[in-house]
Image 1 (cartoon, rainbow, N blue to C red):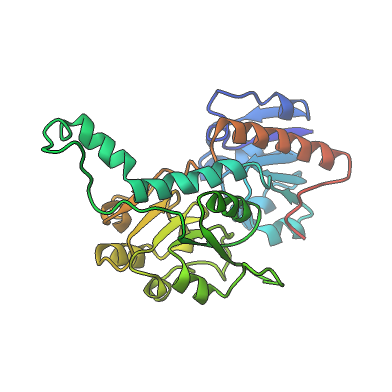
Image 2 (cartoon, helix red, strand yellow):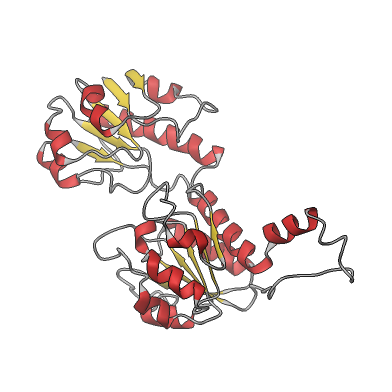
Length: 314
């Protein structure tokens, strides 16, 4: 089987080995592929692996030999799933590989907002502690997590892992998800927004969840509340969030994802008050990326054996 990776660099910038995937066939690795080169590079391949390189209906139709697309991620909005199904192309993803790292990143962002560790460290290194009249100083309020309510929007693997960490901090957990069932922690989204001291987003990007956090949703949150997004940037209306932060409508936001990545200089969140931004790295621990490669190889093996797993298109 001829396998082509279109954008390998982010998953593996050189610190890991593609050997498990190479064992599954004749592998060609491209660090990055511009849109205009996708068809040429994927031509003749039976299997294409992609992280963020888009495979549209037009692209898929230009690749008649293609039988398999492996998404090097959990989210699959980079592939036209309906077009793939119509063309008989199986699409798989890699669920769960980044769960520990993303849960850790949620609290890294939250603790920066509540403990101001990075800002205080920078000011101490710049000489402010030496010039301080007392033995200590801080800027703004330092916030304890114990006793606060953590609202989790999307209660799958990652959402539940975040809940576990939240409980370790002594936080009360509420969650909103499709199909609430009889889970006593699950509430309506409006209730979650009104009651939570921290709102953390862990849902996929769908037409229903796009800009689920907009001006209306932000108006329901407490003025002392924090918003955390390690899921997908377009879950949030960025202009509305920037306006809410600058007006003190909510206390702060920690974001690992933005609607356009890399963001343009005009993105209002880059200059918003009390907004911590990291460059979409919550998923990217070495351990997580190693699991990603191993699972990708297993997905390919299962597909070749006629028993595909982690299939995401009908």
